[in-house]
Image 1 (tube, rainbow, N blue to C red):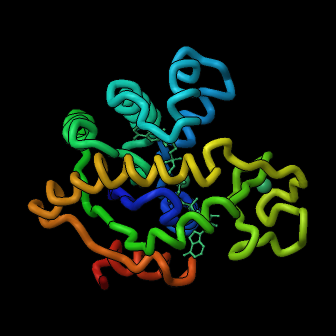
Image 2 (tube, rainbow, N blue to C red; image 1 turned 120 degrees about the vertical axis):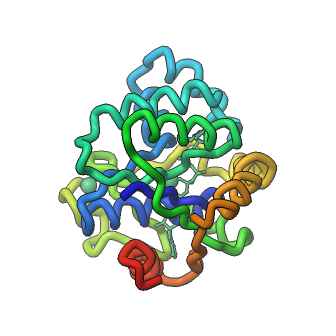
Length: 217
Ligand code: AP5
Ligand code: MG
Ligand code: ZN
């Protein structure tokens, strides 16, 4: 099964993708995480992407579609993919169709996380993650069970993203509205889109997504 999680910055795509990964053995493919890893490693892609990401704008379609294709090639044919933060433009949606077809895969669901944009700024500016394993947390909504200790790996170093400030978040949202939201009708025409209330509790959102994947939604 291959699915897309679609929604504006802070909608919960990464949070839900990692929960589905551990509960269903699917694999999260987050272009944002891949680009951040490239920036950290100082690769040619990372050098090109750094300033664009810090400004909250979109990295080029060719770069992100290239890395998604490479990542799918590394994935066992039996492993389902959760696309998190990709595709983000009509050109990327077109590339994804080709990338999947070339590998004998098809798209099963496009799940739109429907959220209240005003709440997203709070979500994003409160977000932090484990510096060791990447597990996601939030100052108000999703604290580690023991303060200062990662639930998943026991790590004690945490980090925040450089693009998680209010000004950049506003640009990221404008990019979403202008370039990403317009791809929904493409998938709607194919009967693939299902909506989930992304303002519900994290576990309730996961249940709603799993109901869709199990054909109960
Ligand atoms: P990317 O990393 O994809 O960022 P984004 O789309 O802006 O989305 P976020 O990761 O901020 O939000 P999320 O939906 O994953 O929310 P999360 O689960 O963390 O992209 C970053 C940049 O990379 C882009 O700006 C662009 O430059 C570049 N890029 C990436 N992909 C690209 C592409 N395809 N094309 C071109 N450029 C690309 O949740 C947020 C917080 O809220 C967390 O703290 C979480 O704990 C909390 N939370 C989650 N769900 C809930 C809930 N239900 N209730 C309460 N709190 C919740
Ligand atoms: Mg994310
Ligand atoms: Zn950790």
